[in-house]
Length: 147
Image (cartoon, rainbow, N blue to C red):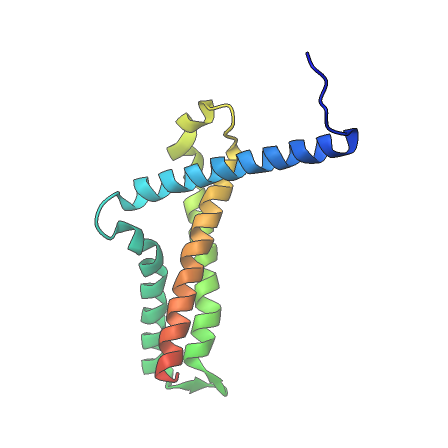
């Protein structure tokens, strides 16, 4: 065995950074696998990641606008739905998709670098990114229209 030439004060930090980088690679790989298994490898399957929350939001905005008009109690319905319903959809997707996380990915846990927390974090990040993109698209569309 050879001694580590780095000073003792930087060995721990470098080891932590290496471990953090490895976890990032693992989570990224699990996210890519999750997207391929859930949305397919061809055509516009990945678009569904953004389109699903987008369709929910547009539907709720349409129904609320038709039922209550443009404002309810002085608050614009579109702004209320965009800022309230997109996080609700995010919470719903995170909770209900995480229920089946271990059942569908149990065989991946045989890999040494993969932990149960990595599976959950990958699903969380995937849902957060999809819903954030849907929020940005909805906000841009309604902002461009002036609602």
